[in-house]
Image 1 (tube, rainbow, N blue to C red):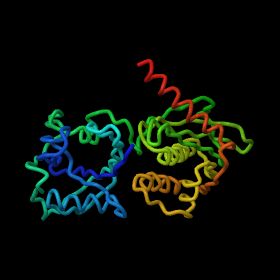
Image 2: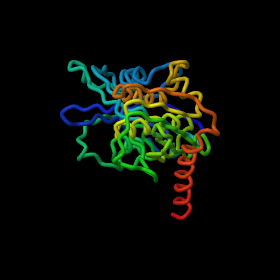
Image 3: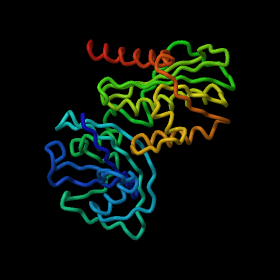
Image 4: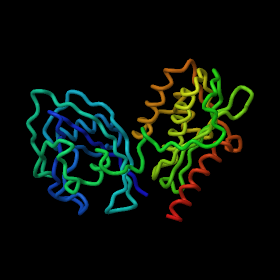
Length: 294
């Protein structure tokens, strides 16, 4: 499966959202409205890409951009092509609100959410605006709590084993975590089904979910144990993060880490990470069974 990273901008003015109508393109988008945006090219940051796309396709400059979400979207015209949508909220400069369209678009409108006709929007725009179910979002995964979860537990120090798996890479993916106290007793475990994404995204998402759970039960010092050498080295600052979608989740993890006294990351061999691996497989097996019976 191929993957492309692209940006989308939610621009509001007077409680209305800017939408551009596609002049041509693939059958699934031709003649439909979408949020402005553009592809992230090699060695380009998503924030730079979205600002460049707004200048090219709408002729506007933004005053502020703020990360809103990251979604995964399968191209309806090519099921082997997956888009990672990096979504920003953008504010235009007060003196720069005249829209000048590129040749890819033939019309623009400002619409209130309640006035938007869903059959006039592209599928990706429906997902970004929350008008259609989203199979995967890096900020809001479908959380699945499993057994051995004591909601009343509160400890100051914990080891958290995490794992992520993708059957296909990219393919159906899940993240899992297991929290152990200082006596190596399991006090919580959980995870998330992520939809279609990559193994690396699932590994990062597992760390994020584990850290969220640690905060919920009052842990102050966290020691992560994971079998992804890539994630361990990137979180320890040994490797640079070049993938835009991984950078988004990594930044979210680093923001959450500020609420703890200490967070460390240690790479362990796969055979020492069977607990978290078991959670991942349980989630993926459950989803596969649902799909087969549904």
